[in-house]
Amino acid sequence: MESTKDHIKYYSISDSEVAKLLDADASKGLSEAQVAKRLIDFGYNKMAASKKSSPFIIFLLQFKSPIVYLLIVAAGLSFFFEEWLDGIAILIVILINAIIGFYMEFQAERSMDALKKLTTIPAKIKRDGTLREVDSINLVPGDIMFAEAGDVISADAIIFESS
Image (cartoon, rainbow, N blue to C red; front, top):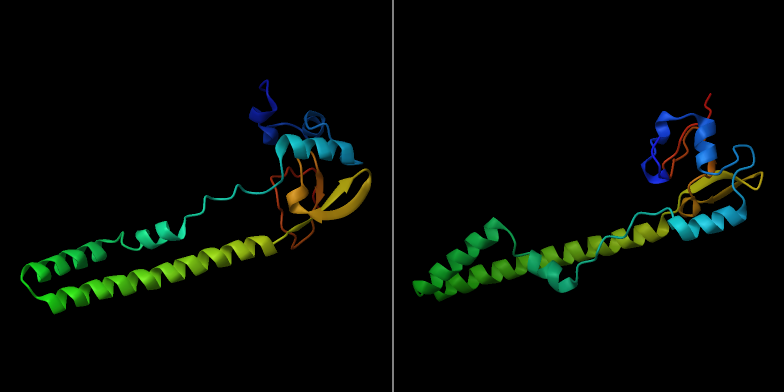
């Protein structure tokens, strides 16, 4: 085994060694004091939020396409050959395409944010000797989870016992 807990290959050691390394009691689970300290040390069990794009950037990205580049060249050539109506029509098509693409992408991003806020996965855990259900965001390293058929496993876990 390596010297730090970060680099231990937990899958390669026994259940009792894992429990000992994580300072967890397999029969009682963690105490509330241990959970509070681990929440401070490790943070909540959630994925880091991705950086949001500003609406302006989302709009500009609508023009990042080979087809759009080709249409811009076609509009430029239309203006060069003094085909004003064709050039303006092509620019209007590019603009309408960008507006529709922006609207759809912006709405999709807002919908994803709303879904993330609504989605909470419950986890059955043992803490202070009692089995309870908590939001998966509150799981910490060393928590003893219980899973039944159909349950969603909401964190990395090691299976101690199965049937």
